Length: 587
Image (cartoon, rainbow, N blue to C red; front, side):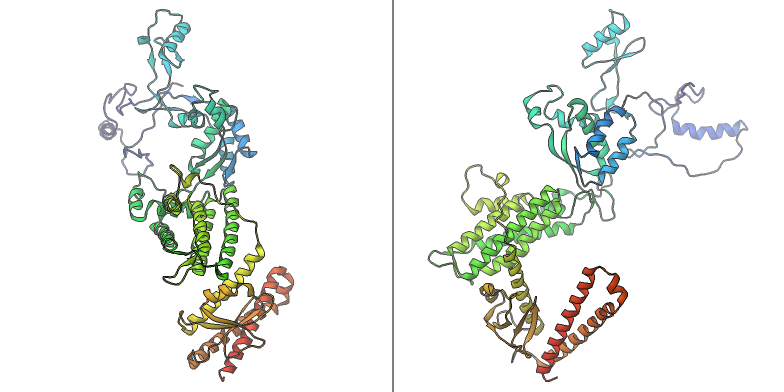
């Protein structure tokens, strides 16, 4: 059938209609109703809702219009590209996007590569005066082909008309892994032979088909090889109500304003910590505030260490030796975790791990262990080790916070001209000593329990306490110097019997007591213990209800039942301890 198109390119009516020629489309719509009525052909008029497409950029109603377009046949191109991803020659992270890719590639349609725009790479097709066309790289080549095709040697370049359409922007983008090394014009140059295929592509999942799939197809078509080995899909940054951030919606904050308010490192850290592979990020400025606060934490920690002076003659204390020994192991463990995260493309998880290492282990624990008294020097070895740890931490944090880490790293030690942290190697992990780390976790629990007693009994932090212990294998006696400093103890006493009047706690199987004679309000303490006793008796009753249910004990996984029995033993031990304390208080 003949194709009939009633529109000119400018939206006016052409001569195919027989009337209204040259008139604008909206004017004609209004005229038609009046002309039908005047001719007695209008039965009725009524309003109804219709789905009308509007241009995203101009807001003008779009009309369907038939036109000549250029297409690229895709079925043969898709076969090797589909196989490469499904067989993991090219690996997707996260892997869930393989199914999206497979669905698109197995249902692929021919690609319309022509666009009616005023900018872009013009399609190299030239139309002959008497019909037909030729495709050529240059006008001169097109003229030669046109003369041969038409048999008319008198044809001139002015007789040919180049197509006005330009290529789809993705038609140049799909060649990016090749063209960036000049591999189209110079297929065997040294750069493309060295760099192609590349290792990793980082992009968003919304352009898997537009760009990723097409680059893979072009790679196999024009180089006979994949363009990259791995594709890491980032999350899409959305606003608080879930809309994708875009210039058109105007819902994207100005990054320069955010950087001015929170610092470039703060904004960068916020995005990286909150964006695991393939998961969208609901943007909130609070994330950037968290990043800025962490930057302040790093800077203040460095100011603290940088303000220490060294006593060249002082030996390293046992407390400082143990602290450095422990942190070296924690650093090594974290390095191994981060390396494993990087290998698995868990970028966000690695960022969070390093964040916690600096904030919790280094700042809150290690620096508190080795910090000298106000105005006092520290021994040279401890100072050097601490600065060495700072150097390692800056290198670990650098991929996430490049500016503050470079600034501190340059200040930590004399650097050669042009030397930069961005090419410094990551620190190396020491051999793992899991037993040492496990013993130190006991220390942290003990210190935390003593501090809780201070808070519960309203005892000042500066007031030294005595710690009593019924020692067994789970008592980390070798870390007594660390316990003394971190819990602010005047001494640690090994005892054989419980002190009913003391505040008690248990770590693993070891019982500890903090004598409180003369330090607390007896009536308030008695009330608190009575409330605690009621809570733990209620908790024990709920646990026993489960364990007395034969169906639960026989059908639940062994690990779950064992966990309930552990809760029972823990509650019974706490109840017994509270009753003894109440008895000692005369209740």
